[in-house]
Length: 340
Ligand SMILES: *[C@@H]1O[C@H](CO)[C@@H](O)[C@H](O)[C@H]1NC(C)=O
Ligand SMILES: *[C@@H]1O[C@H](CO)[C@@H](O)[C@H](O)[C@H]1NC(C)=O
Ligand SMILES: *[C@@H]1O[C@H](CO)[C@@H](O)[C@H](O)[C@H]1NC(C)=O
Ligand SMILES: *[C@@H]1O[C@H](CO)[C@@H](O)[C@H](O)[C@H]1NC(C)=O
Picture 1 (spheres, rainbow, N blue to C red):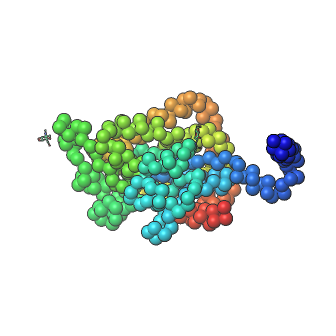
Picture 2: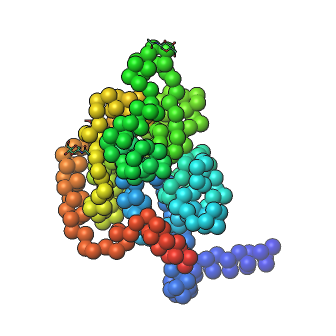
Picture 3: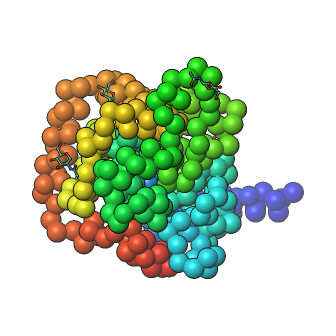
């Protein structure tokens, strides 16, 4: 018994010694490693949709990962050659990522419930764009190989013909017996945002509006391309970021844009909205939720902060990392992460 008390005394005294003289006890570099490991890392989940301004966001998240030393889960290198996709064409599985533990998922993939298991308590964000505008951009970007239109280049006329050929006519749309008919969800070509968001399966038993409600509930923030700056201010608020974290280069979007949704006929647009009705419902829910958040934040305060953000963007000194495209940024990050 006496030995026990003597031992206890040593343990208690030892603890006090470490507590009060700990700074000298450890060498400073050791202390730094200890502290780094203790620092809680935040988990970030970013669902990267196509043709929505999402690459600008990817760059931003990579910058944040550098700043906070967060580890990114990248697409597996050896699975099917070099890819920028985690599990191409199929919903997310942990085996599509090389790293065992990571804090961030941000590269292209299709959502699955597995995400909640590999990134517990993550801040979850995604971005949606007005579906017709998204469709036009995808049509121009993916071109003939994906959309299979006649002729060489993606013109407004080619898009109209494509819709004529592949989509229900106005009379079919207005036919009562086709009401409540399920839309197709297909990678890149039809309701592509719903595809990326992994909603194909859920859509079998839910309505478009159910999916919209699920979306705005599941994600902490659904950004909207048309209100990119406002979305960024809300992101800054949500994640306690600084202006320097959310600045971006404005010049790199849609340089090659040949035509826009304004070049499409009323009929084509109506047919497109019907065809893309899942994405349209998602977008409407997300936009409504975004504006509720802006309202809560304060319209005047939002105006001021957007102005400040634009000043920050205008004053970016030549930033090499920001100029990197998706592939180069990813290569840079992979290399950097080898040293973690
Ligand atoms: C997630 O957050 C909850 C509530 O804040 C907490 O109880 C739990 O331990 C966290 N889990 C992880 C894995 O961080
Ligand atoms: C509506 O669709 C049904 C089923 O496809 C078809 O039998 C009917 O003729 C259509 N009605 C009109 C007015 O086109
Ligand atoms: C698209 O519309 C714009 C303005 O409405 C017009 O200036 C442009 O020539 C049109 N482009 C095509 C390809 O029709
Ligand atoms: C988004 O919602 C706001 C507020 O309700 C509305 O004014 C705006 O037109 C919507 N934007 C789009 C592109 O639908």
